[in-house]
Image 1 (cartoon, rainbow, N blue to C red):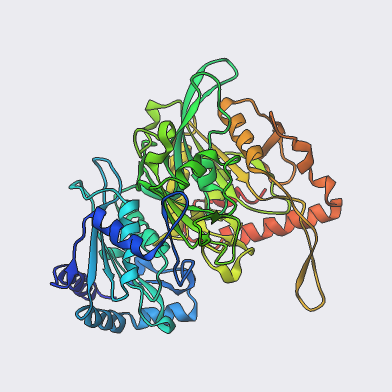
Image 2 (tube, rainbow, N blue to C red):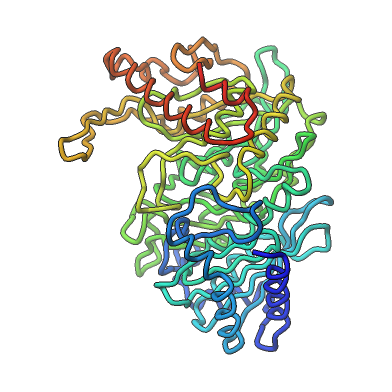
Length: 544
């Protein structure tokens, strides 16, 4: 699309912002009105039910210059792009006739980069005002810092057969049509902000962030920044908001962010939100005490969680969806909340620990220590499994997403090279790890009709076990040994974890191990060689 055409769309959105049918409510008014359409729980917060209960990833299309083109498009996405101008015109004609709520908020809290986020939401169906309330509770109050203007035009009642997410990254405009799922607004603003952050030399990453203080083997108290990459439902929020059993005097964590940060070349990271958007499935007060406390505060908001007529909440009930969600506030983490949503530069901490969280079920080790080249390869591979949060039609399938980030706009190889250059430049202060929150040992056999049958189930890594591994990483107590198949280092001993129960020879024959390993290596090689312009050192890291 030509620049003049993009400018026309931006001008139309700005005019929409000033129309007389646009209403501006205070945060208190938004909450009061929205709660009329929700169900009060026994915790004093409210649950809202949407019609669409996951992101419409397969109906999301980027429009603009070749710089923002998507690598893989389905036929519906191609059709959305072809009809983009016609769709936008129809949307604006409709929005001249209906009531609109405008919410203006700021992303981030820093002096460098704070995008200004404007939600323009049709409330022709009045109960949709909950979406405006949720945006208001996630982002910061409107500020005047530096940053681009971002707009989401959201029409939940748009005809279902024409549901689409139409993204114009270069002008900071997204149209959400025919979906009432809050995740489209949340991720819509983050997607556009990551694009603009890249233009300013930063790397927007789909990752949680925290400060970890731990006493090492020498008895010295160390203070690390930590960034945890991961797709939805792999454990990113769980471990970003976990204390890992760091109980000695002076030890502890400071929770900064759970979803997206903007990584700067000095090792600092700019946080984005004050509200965390967690997956509530099987939320447990014993295993996840910090999250449970924040999620059951009166300030929390539930979305598509099972609540009975008495207000009792059933986090393990997937009748409505396996993608139940909640917005919890940073402030409700109490003493575990970081004073800042940002992470400091590398020269103000003992180092930066980068963790890639994957979820695999066969031969990927539960923990691997990575070289800079292996870390950049892990970034590009982005290995996990699809969940109900992204594309429920493919839930459970193996998936690869560069940076474990489904919201990258533009050249993915450019982002991989940025990450590699960063880690290599700071090699003395940056540690990188790959953690598998799935498990090992699953055996899948193909049937004659092409279907698959699981004949042996996976032995999973439990949350307390992974917390112990992370504790061992930050305290420096893990004994690492060479891994024979993928060229990394893996734990030989971890305090609090029986590492032997994950040994592959307990589940597979030697032939089966070799088949799984070779198959995975070939998949990785084919994937990583598909990116033009990727640093050769990254490509070579998968050819071990």
